[in-house]
Image 1 (cartoon, rainbow, N blue to C red):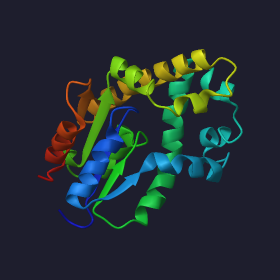
Image 2: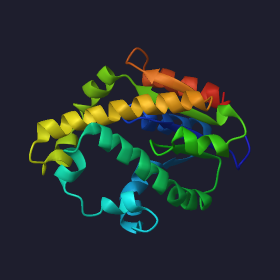
Image 3: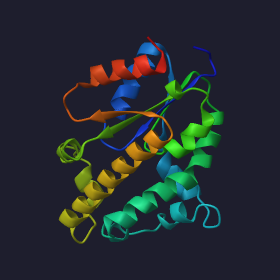
Image 4: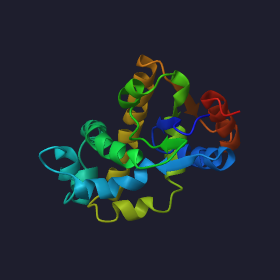
Length: 203
């Protein structure tokens, strides 16, 4: 493994990507960059001219985010990841490797042109039942939806958005020849970390 190596761990939310990334970074000495942590800063730094979807989120209300149909939410999610990616690339250029990039923002269509081998990228996608079970256990979900006029409907829209996004990621990863791990609860995080390490050639 060279110092300029970059490994991409993408996928849909609630698949255990962050937990796997933490294990790999600690075990193999990788610089772990969690792309989700950059979203708030990127929204604030976005321009209506170059990142209109990102910029529209600056002053969006809870209802404007979560009470629109899930189909529109999924399209918006994909679009703001497309707009955000150049901002991620600027951040990544400042980091020293080997790097492990992790986050839903790593859309297969964006990553595929950047890699020389399919073993540099891996996607993790949860089943709908796994996603719903584990999202409901996250204590911060209620805080996100607190200001919505109908939190229950907002949560249902959120789940449907991420289910659609998961299907889209799985399909586009397949189109680009990238491997996907389906997370359904039958394997633990350590097993997923081992599978990821094998895929990336770290073992």
